[in-house]
Length: 94
Image: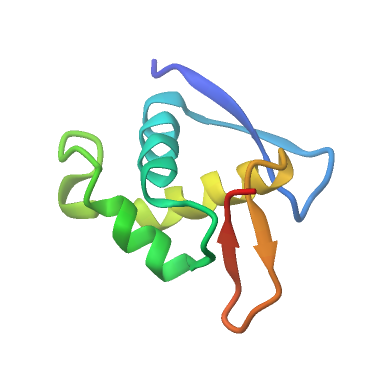
């Protein structure tokens, strides 16, 4: 059985979900490599992070969009990412 990690969702305060720790950590690390103080859209984050994902966990980037969103919502809930009210929405590190 795969190791799990508990994540939060900024849109549902107080609710947590357990997800695959290896995929979460890998996507988290990839996102932190590409994100900085300049706002990025969800599409930009996903495409930039995809370049740092190993094929054994994300073959040809499979499911990377779902994982990028899961990590983004968790990091936003924890205050590690800031949501900007742009159109389209964008995020940055504080």
